[in-house]
Length: 154
Image (tube, rainbow, N blue to C red; front, top):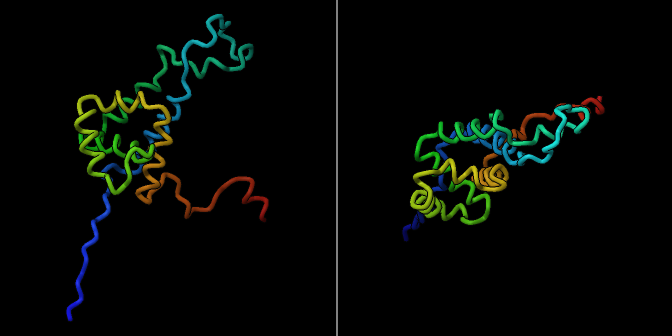
């Protein structure tokens, strides 16, 4: 009797370097907290207005452009992969449906992926959750933590 070998499907891999995803996550977090003109009568004095104006999406603010440029710096396939990764993180697709997510992302958002991603609320959270589904993460859990908690143990 011969043992039968069952081929299990190869898990998908990401072609986007994790450090690029980490940068996009950071920029997406900065962009997500931006808001419209919440203080139209501002006296331009950060002390008086509690520094609330820093969260406004003003004309001279580069956060939007930095996020857009970071996404556009990826090649076309990686931008589609980023959309699919966000969908996996959001729960729209499972990791087992990775190819379906890629195909749908290409069909629906292949022409303007950066604009689509930038309009997605909670983009940073979805990308991090998507990385978790791949067994990857942005934070290196193998490195010891720094800060007061480590100093207290001495």
